[in-house]
Length: 394
Ligand SMILES: *Cc1c(COP(=O)(O)O)cnc(C)c1O
Image 1 (tube, helix red, strand yellow):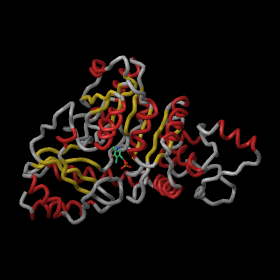
Image 2 (cartoon, rainbow, N blue to C red):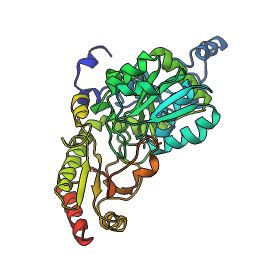
Image 3 (tube, protein in one colour):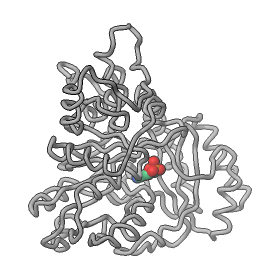
Image 4 (spheres, rainbow, N blue to C red):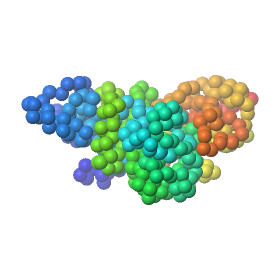
């Protein structure tokens, strides 16, 4: 990277991974469609095979091509890791460190606020195959130590939770985790590599649903696993191969393209999210807005210390019935109803977090609506919210 690391993030986004390709003058790294990679000799092939789990080795299409490597290097540089591994979805990224590091009889501690589909992988797949899974209260810091067993290998965090936005103190968690010889894995999708870098706070492995803000246009699915140390990087490359993971070069292209505009998009997502959150917090029908950047949100102190910005995803608890909250969401015209987030479009979703808890209880009275603030003009979004509140009589 040379001097590049001295540059501001916004500038880095326009440079990373572009410095040294084929000398044609074309700005972007070309898309390489590949299964077979041809070698000059059997010896060259044997050499590539021996290094196939090392960074940037061209061996066989499934292991990636120069466009994959450029994207992986860019994300690793932004997160401050040794390397990163592109995988087929965000969920695939969450799963990789678990499958790659855990053996039958091992124990994993997982935040109760974890991305819900990963909970199913843990309880329906991994625990059925001999991995011992314990969910923990995301507000635990040093007290997490009491939940360790002699076989605890991984502590899995997500900061903030993508439905209920609990913050986690990664510095404290990493101290506790490392004191017991385990690894800290953190899902950093909400903040993107721009607004938080968990490795700098003590995490060993960072996972991202690149599907969200990095791709940024709701048109591709992709995950990324960033690894702090070379040793773990190799182990996870190998695990990625066990699982047969591969990311299409077209999806790598879309994610690389998304990365170039990430900083400007995140600024708007942040601004719009805050405007909506402030508006909603002033409405009599809104019991509570859960947005880590608002001072009354639990975890705000951690947010202020560890994050340099907020994305556009937050929630509001409405003091109304499920029927009225649903009618409110249905009558919004600029907010789509659907899963995922991080695209240019705003979204709203009625959610019931109580189904996704086992270590803690969701005790909020009222109905939770999760919002994603897209890239539309703020005034249009605010008008839409005001109209929907009015017509549904909330
Ligand atoms: C969406 C999401 C994932 C999964 O990503 P997919 O690409 O949809 O598989 C993982 N973690 C978090 C926090 C997410 O929001």
